[in-house]
Length: 161
Image (tube, rainbow, N blue to C red; front, side):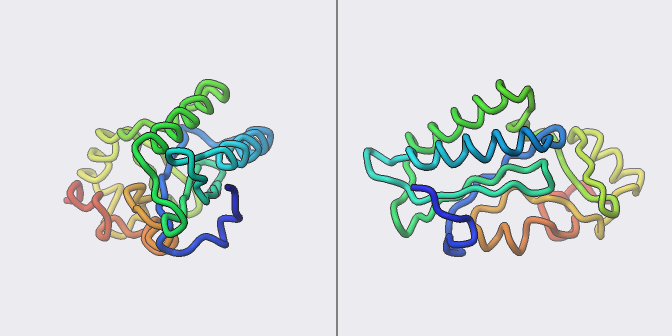
């Protein structure tokens, strides 16, 4: 059951999928339509899930579920992964590569492979104050408050010199 993202409670569970490139305006329209359709039929063992999505910076797809309405199950998570994999094939993007790391350089979003991020940190091109995207947040509240953070406040800090 689709609901507007802003209407989900702060404790809603989120999954963040970062694209290896920006989405075009046409792709955002396709993703939005398909995501709403998917969420409208998304269930847990036959029970509706109350969910939503948002797209940030034309590069991040965030799926969210209000678990106070119904908890997700392994099967419902699997179906969301299949949905994202279908988007990857259709749009020819990589949304699930956990070895990609994103960070900000002023207003520009950079996406690099993890070894490159480590090298940038070693060369001090990335510092403790560099804004990174912590895609490991789990709730809407964490997403809203702790997704874009200085590297020193994220798992990225382990790579800092």
